[in-house]
Length: 189
Image: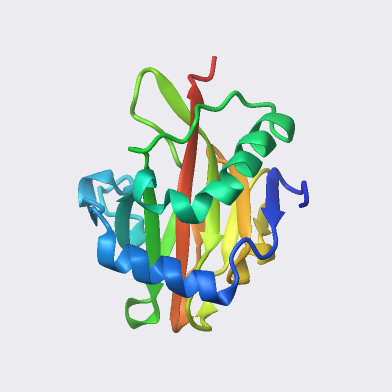
């Protein structure tokens, strides 16, 4: 783990065998594709995200994540000082698929909630890419732009403050896959 530029990371959350298993499971059991209305948009209303997003409930993938759920929840509290709600069965998780076929990317954005009762406090990204890829570098902006190289390795996971601007550069070769979990808590005051 590292606390650098408002993020934490873990190495080897999943090995190659688990990465293949979870990809296969999600590809065959996801609930739906993310609607365009849910994607972040720029001031002209154009989507900032050029990726395929398969949405799946936590209930369906919790057997893959449960070993790390407590680690994520404890880190949210101890390393960020956030009160976080438990990841419930009906929470939505996103499999983000960025392909070189269309230079998949995600311009600067934040992860936020449109709900009046809670905020998304932290974002967890787990690299579950099945193949080598080029490009797709991940950046966070917090007074400066920082590349988070730890996310480039399949099996690694990062956690960061969701309100920080972040982006994914275009994938130039292959396909980059990340599983996104959103940890929610009481509204910021």
